[in-house]
Image (cartoon, rainbow, N blue to C red; front, side):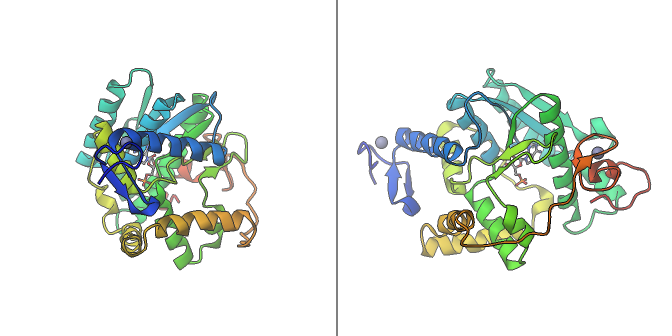
Length: 310
Ligand code: AMP
Ligand code: ZN
Ligand code: ZN
């Protein structure tokens, strides 16, 4: 198998794009594809300050690497959630990457140190320890902290490592359950709709997971390979498996499924009517925008005695 551009031995064959590339041309292709995604979805301009949320997994470290190679001012934010050995090892990989990229800053927030409880401890205290509940609570903590840090440190935009497989799996879940509100809003760009609500972007949405993994491999980016122990058995993993089966039989299926959904919605071919947006106001404790009366869901989490926070 030879590179389509230079005839050297190829390191990857991408059936979905009818393309095989050598290492050098694959890296160039990935950089161009992400640059083009940033441009075509108007994610951010070259002068913006970007905060990359890095988990220690491949996608977010690959994203950080790509943004730095493209010349953006991109710093990292890692949230130490206190999920045992999994969080310790995740942090090690983030530190390792940051050490070898002195041009970028890394901000680390230790949730237990800052708020007194790790995410599993918080879940236990809220009787959220069973089933999938800890994941929604963890999501709430992550969203709040990403927004808080970006605001406090003057970042224009928060970038996360969601790839095409993540987005297609989310879309499948939203369709299966007819989550109209989520279908209306699922997007590579979430604009700031209220002061203090930071813009969020997903620059890897046009890269397959297989492609981000290959990029990590050829660029020597080390990352944590295991899933969060709480995510095992999550529906999103089942949806990914199903989509992979479809992709095997029909190369490009995942990309068509997700990108054509965005296109059809943009062109008004799919009309979704979400419930009217709720009025936002600043949380009386932390000041972040919330639709909940008084305090936001995150601040209510840490109140002694409250049994439900989300
Ligand atoms: P997940 O929801 O775990 O699939 O992660 C989606 C994205 O959220 C990742 O690609 C990261 O950009 C970000 N993220 C997840 N966990 C963390 C973390 N502990 N610290 C910082 N960012 C994270
Ligand atoms: Zn080549
Ligand atoms: Zn609050």
